[in-house]
Length: 504
Image (cartoon, rainbow, N blue to C red; front, side, top):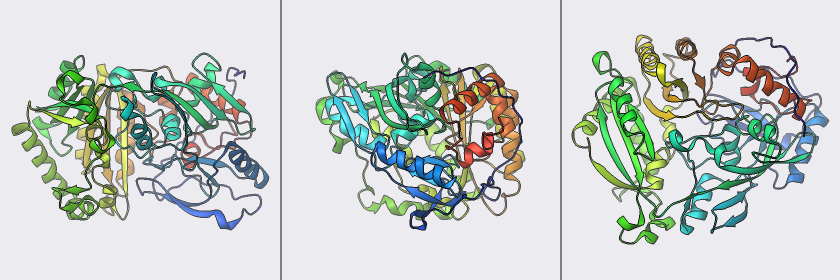
């Protein structure tokens, strides 16, 4: 497949999209069968739409969905497990191509650790299939309930990004079905332009039908995790730099309510693989039942009930208290201590409390995740945290990680750090939160930063274009027009950031 250089010009329309400001979607040219009409919601519960949901099980089934969309003059938005915080998989009143039923393991070689899966296979299904043979996914997110197709579409990252990069660097090949019905096989060498463009393209170039991934060899299912307290943001960043060469994984939690001299205080966790020589029975640690997190707290309280217990504290007063207590306990009882955890317990913290997002009902939550070069990170994130406090909207959860750049076309990573901020949407802040998010975007852009679309709900087209750079943006549009000349693949996210592509 030949991918030509871009020639189109760019005319931008800046727009801030929040739950009450959805992109406008043209109605279908002819009615679609109503029996497939369902409500589709963002994972952050901040937006929802009625869509015509189709769940194919074969490549032929995907082709039929593309043909149906063409026949009725509608667009197609792809959806995996629906774990994007924002509108990345909302199709508007069009077709939602749900790939969760294409969830077969196609090939597994326990000698080499190479596995081929369909796009609907979840991270949970992946690690449970391979860990008994001594292999773990090379990159995992904070939840195991994501599909591999969605993970590749967003090119997700983990707490080890500073060493191993995003998922795409461990994908050996993939098959992708273009809207024309053409099936392409891509590797870093064969069809390399499409390979580096499709990974991270948020589902705008085609539908992954299979992915071949190189897994990570592990001797045990255990990690040694050391926690250290930082009194402020400068101390936090210094801990990261001091630990970067010796840790396999690094992540920091920040008290978003702390101010003044305590601004950016928090806890840094560094984790290292535990070799077989340091475990009495390493094979036992590789059994899935020894990785699974318990369903109850203290063996009594079902974890499925915990979000109800948390709900009364999910306000700025309760969360200020909880953040302060977390730091106090971590900086006294846990500071400098090392504990042993399973891979699942350390990596999948977001799965520890089922349905924890329900504490943000009825209006949901937004996450703002930015990536800033190392040379500007302290100044930028100081200003970001200060801006939140000045607006009276402190993040309920703030997480910082260290990263390195990669070579994918739509890349959010760079040599620096990321900061993820969780904000509740409330009646009180609903009008002021968009202003704060716009301010945060400006601070990040001023520092030469980027944004992660799997978490985004509000970025404007102008801000995203500035973060991409004009050359990258035009290159992506050129590939988009060659792979999908009729602009069949669209979502509310793509319409918010690129319009309908037709005017480019």
